[in-house]
Image 1: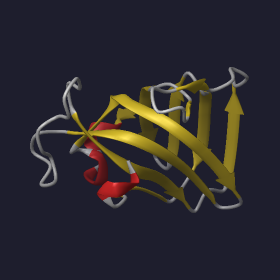
Image 2 (image 1 turned 60 degrees about the horizontal axis):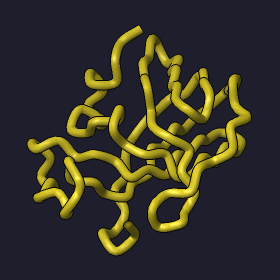
Image 3 (image 1 turned 180 degrees about the vertical axis):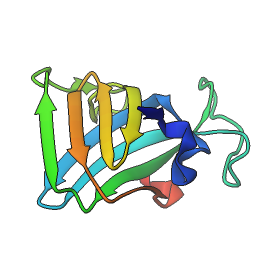
Length: 127
């Protein structure tokens, strides 16, 4: 499998220090809401907020054209983050091979067949 850094739509993000805030699986799609780390090369990257190491932005990691999805090792309840919201931990890995994506973290492991993966940043006031 190939690491997510080789996916054009994801090469300007650092997922390993990003935070998963929500996961929504629906027929044909999987959406993960994140506080995602922007790499310095990202055009929207700015200075980190006080007390933070990275520039974070609220975003949605979307898998579209999902034809199969297998989610295992789930069961840990979400933690509460500093603002009182849900936090499903970080992303340990995201890899792909010929339309099969494998993503793992504190939320479990998800393996799916999907046609498209993309990151969409949300308005800055969303964070």
